[in-house]
Length: 538
Image 1 (cartoon, rainbow, N blue to C red):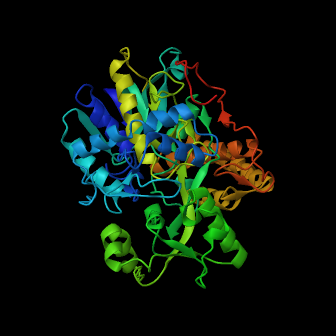
Image 2 (image 1 turned 60 degrees about the vertical axis):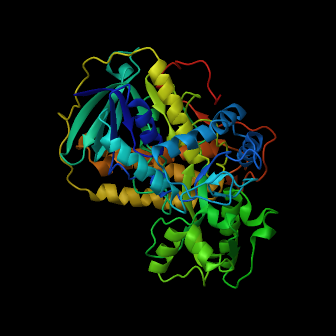
Image 3 (image 1 turned 60 degrees about the horizontal axis):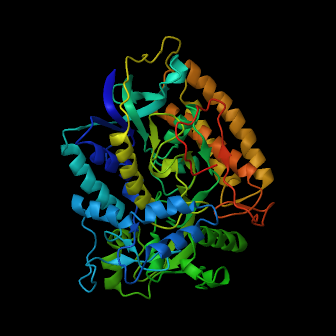
């Protein structure tokens, strides 16, 4: 058994920022399924939204833009909480050494871009590789800090919950973790456990997410008794590069913010017919418009055209996208980029308060795995990394100021009744089947019949996977598949409960938007008593 003050599961921006906030005061262990820098945060291109120019922008405007994008479900208190702390979050990153793109002509000193749904230029960035640059900077600091133990190639299996081990008042006491390299289960005890595991993009056949985005934190929290909410709101990014050799490569929102135009193969521009904001409409509108045009004309993709911009401008602002496109034979300075929508971001997740606390004592959730109330029914572009930073700091403050929790000896992982798997084909087949029917039945546009079909298939898969899990030793693939099928179940259950079209959830059976916006909250039968009084999701 390993023992720490804080166990952080996940190494994206939220997890890394939290570790650095705590490391001078607590013994921190951070585990990650692959390398420390492997996360969805590292793939973020556009930037981080924050009010940095008080002359041209305001907190009130950023709050309003977020609430509009959230389609009536963004919590005003949570939204103000995050937006008001935007400048502080960016200053912290600058202090860590993140080399944001400069602009000598700006009084601010940094270049700000504009993305869909924003009324002003407020997105600070590092060219077109913001996430990668931020992760690289923090990773260097993390590795050199003596107060942080990093365990790479370690995947969490399940949370250690007191109620399941005869200690109903103990809350969360850590987690069982598979050391992938040594193929053995480690028990990690912790007074505070933080889920920073990211989203669940790999539940879909086409996604901009890395392979690690398998809904692990959400599934573990649900099994531990926590509420989850608004899982039906899956953001499909409008522009993923369409090419057989370009797996999951995102074309940033900022390219449309800088004047990119969406066209049909014959060159016709179509976004003005779908929304007055055209290419600068929120992502859900743009994604549905592309989906509509592709189905209407029988297309494999549409095209993002930036050829009217100077080549020097494109090379300066989008060097990584240019290089990737050129490697595939696409010169974006001379020809439009083929794009399709792809699953990108989960707006729902584990219900938390403004201190990142979940329903279970000692358990926190930050980043994409959490439902804080900020994103509502549709996330405003570049608000996600901001949310990671703000709630990482909020969680750190709560941990540092809260009453101490003692974690005594914990039960070891029991493998006495399982054996080695005899056939791995069950895992690979179920993985493929799940992702395909989720794409077909629970995608950008939904119907009751499609959701019922998905529900039926999930029920069969869960039974098969649970039986496999009960009889064979765990592996990384089995852990991820078990979490994916549970997350898919939660998505479908939420979608079936929403009898309207709102934000990212569009139903042909319920095309109208209800007059009152309500959250979709799922409560597990094993749910523990809430240990805090104020929650953003009712």
